[in-house]
Image (cartoon, rainbow, N blue to C red; front, side, top):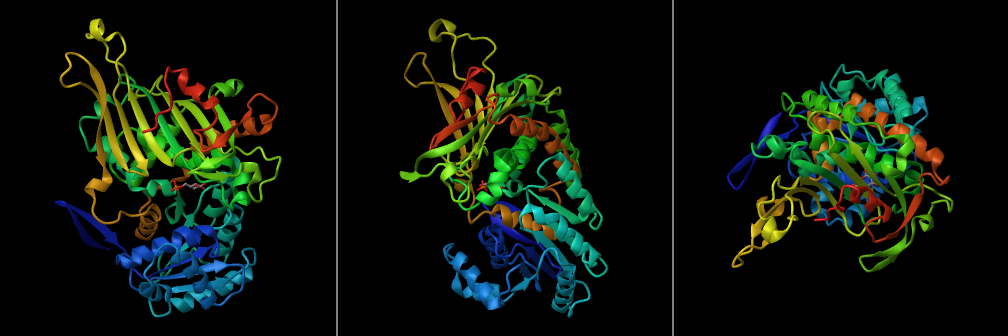
Length: 509
Ligand code: BG6
């Protein structure tokens, strides 16, 4: 392992580079994820000299095609991303294609032979198996790899990367885990949540625990509530086959939103290492008060987008998207209120929301502080005065804002709320890592910090499974309605009611 130095305004950051030769075997080679995220991320890592010598990519798909055909099809998707044609030639020489039937054990023997052939000039060769397939294939691929000895670590390490969703509820997640664990140990398994690879998400712990001034007020004594929003303007595109079975609670809440919640609410880990960080996150999940199913409507609002206008363009409603059944009741929006029952957070509501086809692409964590305890300006200003707020802007416009009150210059006594703002773009030179670059690099380095440990998946599903069961049996009966919302809005108006009970509104900064 070597360290290459990147210097930035007197800041020296170490970026670890991998040094042992490896093959990344990507199942789902023709899929959207491979084309849009994985190959571009690997291309950029290689361009920046962060892949080891002897690194190659073997993509796996069901279709038979030549490697030239496959590389040509990749190039088509990559061209729209503005790649350097000359460098693509160099990069694509190490990209290969192998066709295989996921369920056919004999095919995996063929894969084993191929991998041995690729690594024959080295004593040790590492394999990373990346499962970028539909979730239904995770179990069978893992088993077949294991049965062919491809999880054995006799001559190099073997790691397996599992995309989300990891199961579709608590039971199926445990079942999947048991199947994987027959052949792979926990330290060989990397359960991905790409949000954890985003630069600003990684910064949450630094912000909280590398500064003295925020942590003393980061608790129920000073904080009124916390809101976490992950809003997208995109619809489901061509992913109906996946999305319609999954919906927003499994697609965004079980993983991304709960991870943001855990990083915001957890205690300081004893050490900045994967085990200690995972321990603290799991404690947060276990402390979340189960949502009372008999009063679900007070804690959860679900919605589905209707037609509307996004960026001046008419867009269809969810039910008119290609591949979505016209009777679908899959939610594309959810707003949820949860409480964490521990000394730090008792009584502080956490409002969570995520939706597709919303007015703006925006992921942020807004921490709203309580009013001042005594209003000494009440005679001139009345009882009301703005409150402090910290907003962690995860994307786009990555940064951190602190809202506070000032006296307006010139006036005798007149206040105004202002935002003190830090933007990553003003500070960093160069291009930051994309989330997938970071997580792929970490798989190669064997660093589990940005991945989800088994008990983390379990605890998140334990929280959501009863809610999903209630919603999926109740949907349509009127107890928890599925609210329509116009594409290009901030979701169903009913979602505002959740936060208005606390006397406020959703924060958009
Ligand atoms: C994925 C979800 O995990 O995250 C998608 O499956 C969603 O539905 C995406 O669009 C959002 O990721 P990002 O990085 O674009 O915010």
